[in-house]
Length: 385
Ligand code: NAP
Ligand code: GDD
Image 1: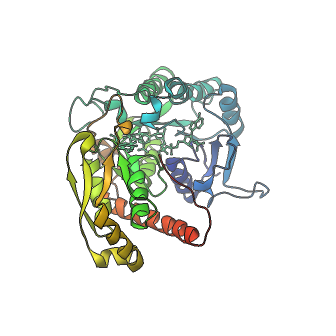
Image 2: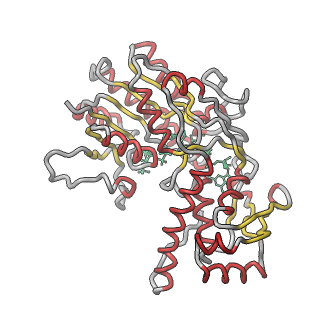
Image 3: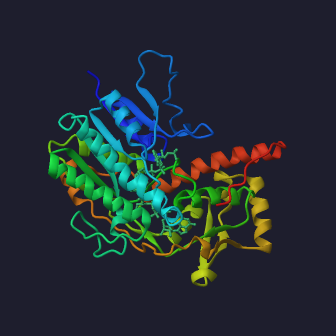
């Protein structure tokens, strides 16, 4: 019989990659999507099947992690072998604006699933994955961070995820549930949410070189993150649930990089060299040179001329807006994935350059389409965030 998986957060970045990964492995995938006023299934559109087809391998259910009855009913109906709890209000900065909602979704939401498994007497049939996070380390106690590094959360998001982490451990110890935490460091992709720093940079860069935007306003350029590719990270989630014994694992690349360097590398992919001048809120990224051949290969000759013309009046493409600073910041994340390497045999296939190249190329294609529409007199959206 085909294995069944239930994914909360299936419309998000990781949910989409995980659904694709599990379907390729022969799973029937059930996903929980929220009701919204617009369709919100773009990331899984290529997997989506007409609900009238009889034997489908992707089935969506309306639901919300804040609704215990809904969660319990869905689990009862689909009786999955594996549950991946990826649903969350996942933006750290936004969690300062919506702390109670974040606690309810990211913290208590996890409890609702665990309790449903227990009440439905499915604890010996279901394996549970909790999307824990390197944000738990917050004001880091040691470098690099391992499964034994103490937690010090620095945001309402991280505090909610701290509860989710420990309630997962508690259900494992109290009831013998096969429940594991993946302590995942930042992972990105071409389908990353547009307001996370990586995607904001690759989209902003693409708009700037095409003349759709002049300046990219950023927050803390000195923060360091251990960035990987989401495709590698969903494979680690799956591997955790295939182990005989549940456990908790750090998933990271083991390399940490400043936001400033991520920006520099992204611009370098289209042939633009940047130099950062000034500090704190007065820091700016200035274009110091353009490699014509690379720019033309990646963008176009016509846009090169326009871009060079623009540089004559203003060479500063990056500026800082303190509005993006967080009340409490996580300055440094740097993971040690030794346990996952050893026990799960998990080794990432992407490095940071490969990730950035894929993201820049994908956003350039998207923004060229926008540019084409604009030139044809069609309305395009502004993407200010
Ligand atoms: P994402 O793109 O923001 O996706 C979050 C998903 O959760 C979306 O499908 C969203 O639905 C759904 N969701 C939000 N609130 C919900 C609610 N109340 N009820 C049900 N579903 C809800 O996040 P991601 O990057 O894929 O991350 C997946 C998980 O891993 C999250 O739990 C995140 O906190 C955690 N995590 C992520 C990273 C990372 O670097 N990406 C690292 C560590 C941990 P809508 O599409 O309707 O908004
Ligand atoms: N979003 C954003 N926007 N971040 C910025 C900006 C900006 O304009 N400028 C600088 N940053 C800095 C943030 O202050 C932070 O230090 C870093 O870039 C990364 O920010 P995000 O990409 O928003 O991610 P995050 O690290 O806060 O959280 C992500 O990773 C966590 C795992 O460590 C999210 O995916 C969380 O859900 C996840 O748990």
